Image (cartoon, rainbow, N blue to C red; front, side, top):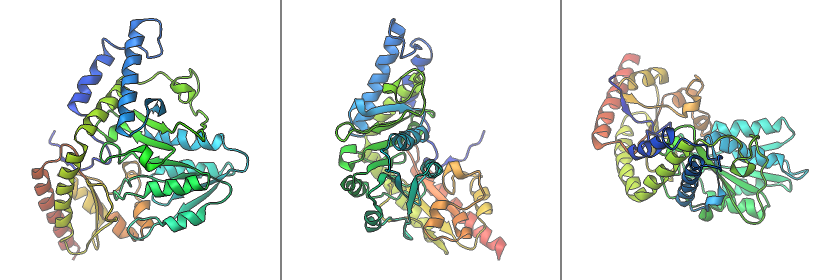
Amino acid sequence: MDLPIYFDYNASTPCFPEVVEAILPYFTSAFGNASSIHHPYGWLAEEAVETARERVATLIGAEASEIVFTSGATEAINLGIKGIAQMADSGKNHLITIATEHKAVQDTLEGLTDQGFELTCLPVNAEGEVSLDQLKSSFRENTLLVVAMLANNETGNLHPINAMAALAKNHGAIFLTDAVQAVGKIPVDVKELGVDLLALSGHKMYAPKGVGALYIRKGLPKIKLKAQITGGGQERGLRSGTLNVPGIVGLGEAAVRCLDDLQEEGQRLLNLRNQIEKALLQIKGSQLNGSSQRLPHVCNVSFNNISGKSLMIRVNKKIAISSGAACSSISDKPSHVLTAMGLDQATAMATLRVSLGRFTTAADIEFAIEYIIGVVKDLRTLAS
C-alpha cells in the first residue's frame, strides 16, 4: 500500500521500535497479571509496572507514587474532573476553563453543569491566548477547579500554566492541566508548573494506544478524588481493573526515549516546522493561527477563498494531514478552537494543521511544501 507522508503527529504517533521490542515479552513469556501476588508471573508484571511508573514520573518531574495509570488521557481527564467534583465540599461548585480546550475536557465539564455545577468558559484573543486578568476576575468564593491545557492540540499554543496555577492556588482552587500534546515533546515539570493534576497519553509520545496516566500531586492540601471505575481496587483504589501491562511498559519505555534527547529533537523539529511554515505563509491569502509561544513541531495555516473539503481531499492524496483534532474530524463543523479565535467558518474549514514528529525528514518537508503550494494553486484556478 502506497501510504502518504505522515504529517499528523498530533493525532497519533508510531511506536518507537524500542517500545515495541520492550512490550513483546509481556504478551508471551511474562504475561502475568500484575495483581497476582502469589507467584513469579505476577511479580514480573508488577515489577515492570512499577519500573514504568518511575520512568513516567521522571519524565514530568513527579514522584512514582503520584502516577495513576489509565486507558488514556480521556479517562485521566474524566477521573480528574469528575473525581474532584464528586468529592467537593458542599457549595464548591464553580468550574473554570478555556474556550479552546479539547472536547475531552469541554464535554466532561459541561456534563457536570447538568448536576448543578456552574461553568465559566474564558474566551481567547485572535492568537488563541487567554487573559490572566480575566482569569483572575473569574474566581469566586465557590470556585472548585480550573482546567487548562498546557499546549493546544490544534494551534500548538502554550498557555502560561504556572501563572494560571498560581492564581488558582491563591484562590483555594484545584488546577488540572491537559498536557497530552506537550509531554515527551517539550520539557514538562509538574513542580515548576505548580499543577495539582496532569493528564498524559501514550499514543501521543510514541507509546501504544490505550494507555495514559494521571499525575496527582501529593502533599497538603490533599487532593481527594472519587474513583470512576470500581471493582478490584487497583491503582490505589482510584482506577480498578486489570492493568494493561504491555501498554504501561511501552509508556515507560517511551518516556525514557523521549527524555533522552528532548532538547535536540525539539530544535530539529523547530527548524523543520519553521521551514514549512515560512513557505506556506508565502501563499497569497494564507494566515497563521496561533501565538508566538507554540510547540516547536506544530503550525496551523488557513487559506482564504478556497474549499476546505476540496483542500483536504487533494492534500491527503499524498500527505496525511488534518484540519484539526482527530476526535472532531468526523464532523463537518469548523474547529471550535479556530472559531473561538475569530475565524469565519469557511476559513476555519480551509485549514491545515501541520504536526511533525520523530520520523519527519527534511525530504518530507521539501515534498510537502511543493505539493501543498501546487494544490492550493490548482484549487484557486478551478474556483476562478
